Length: 417
Image (tube, rainbow, N blue to C red; front, side, top):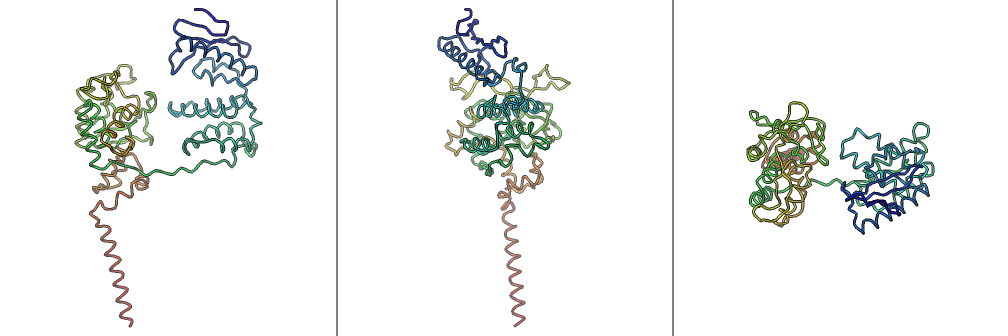
């Protein structure tokens, strides 16, 4: 079907909207999560309303092209006036192009939020401290962390404008982050760990069991585990080298969270997990990778989930894990519910590894090295699990020392009489 008089075009199985912006007629395909919006009657009515909305905003000089069509290649060609808040925010976002995909996506979300709150076409000079502080303070932030993360984008945007002698005029002066209460690690007990693994072995494909077995017995971050390749394993030394992460929509970075490679020693249970995965991924190759490393990812998803032998679940293609979300939502969460365990995130498998090691007397420096922490950070997070790892001998020594001091003081006092 051709163009409609309301600015809506039906193009096969998709919809396009047409309008004039900055003197040029433009057409944009409507999408939802990257997929074309189907030309159903309801969607066509939505598209017609959208055209009316866009034309109204253009007439009011308030239309933000990037907000309505963030994935459009035309966004880069739209004329930007850095005296307007939206354009300045977009420039700040462009300056962060060297960041990882996940970080850029989070920054983009924050920029869109601030443009909606303050208005993309609002002159920057009209955004004074009083207005900005009131808007920030009056918004019902879901958490202190969200507030603080969004503030990075806002501070960065105003920082482009207010530099040098103008810094005194920055409307962000005096606006501080919210205090975040640091949550203590909440590990599973040894009994809980073993029940979780036993239940997964019984109900799920063995590749799921192998993944969580590995998590509990290496303490690795999930974004590190799903990026491991067979070329990272040193079978002779019984170690695996952690040197990359996969964090966002399959994006991979050749660096860990601490930007330092490390070797993790393999316990027998970790070797067991590798042996389970061998038959599935060891002989696979990835031809499109650059360089000589074409070894496949060690841990990959099965083709069906969630429960083996149930005939239920939904099909999903076998292949690499793109993030830790599917493991958590499809396997971890149902397992805890089934076992009637108190909810904790799958990341607590890492905390469980750390606390079990410390409680059994493993040196904190070694545990820190395995986790990729500094010793200071390890002690800050896990100090409460260290007392008692030596059969309370440290406490007994302290009691004996205090008792000896008290006896000595008593004798001195007695001799003085």
